[in-house]
Image (cartoon, rainbow, N blue to C red; front, side, top):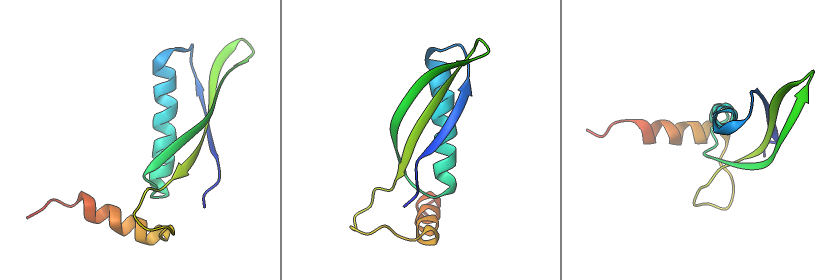
Length: 86
């Protein structure tokens, strides 16, 4: 299983900062071919007076079987789902 992933997002708060951070996390888990994200921690911090968010999450994969497929199998399944039907 993949471990926890974290991203830093500079910004002055608000929904746009949080949205940018979640989008960054989603792009990271898509590279690993997971299809779900569990956000575990959101913290507002400051560095030299500049605010930023740290967002931590765990990638998850929702599927019918009880055992997770390999990365190659998840990539293949995802490519089949995105192909247009003839």
